[in-house]
Length: 213
Image: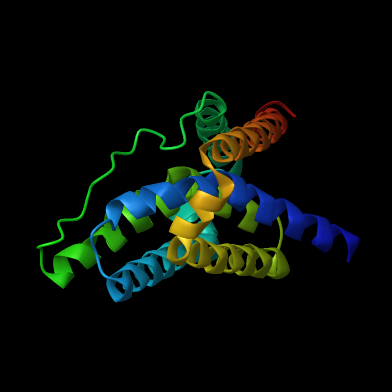
């Protein structure tokens, strides 16, 4: 029971750090700028829903994907660890966008065109990017059925939190302020870098045991 609780906290913090809904809120506001309230809510809901299904699919079928493509768990952990560490490193430098471009929605465009940003770039790659997917597969494949369920539920809770921040994002950013937002981003970057390094160390250790012992 204690191990499951620790696993739950680790999974949620890992997802929170890599998806960083607080830092992504200004990006969302930029992408939905000029849209009415209902459209903003629709974009927020669609983006988190699509991101949830993407991550849940990889968390559930991760082992099948491994078998299909001949991927080993330690290879994923090494690659994912490097990727997660680099994202965290860039966040420590003050870069919360990870190389993503902001696209401003045209206020005169049709609603369907405005909603298209929910799929890309919001759902993928901002919310469910390579680092998030690698993290989900890593957490889900470290244990059995319960670990997979915990991974999915934890990400679902984070998606709900992200939706709340997106919908009330303008008030949140004004309340927190740019300086505090920058500090939070760097803190998440540090946590993310540590998680990435831990994944890398575990992957190297498993690779050594599998290849040389």
